[in-house]
Image (cartoon, rainbow, N blue to C red):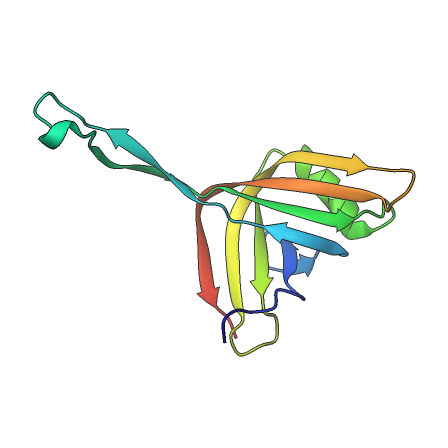
Length: 143
């Protein structure tokens, strides 16, 4: 098989700090984690063939961005407002292929760096949230 259908992927937040996760309702798109790594230049006058040289630097867990069909009356949508206001990190999960034998879960601690709402005249109300990951995100087979 060449690929997997992403439909049904879930975004969850830890509701009590003790590993009890609740799915955020009406999520339409999830992207990330978008990990990166610094490249530290170590080029010297005697670098071979006049090519720049690099060594591996610090890694960054990146970000996860979600888009949802916004409902201000939804308790899970209101929870994102509370998460944005709090000072502590919170744990989140992205569950890929939930209920399938090949289910996997990304787990990470993060803070919300951007929370934006849109209310167009000719389309649905929408919210985007960007989660900046602190530390290493982990992908675990959970199916």
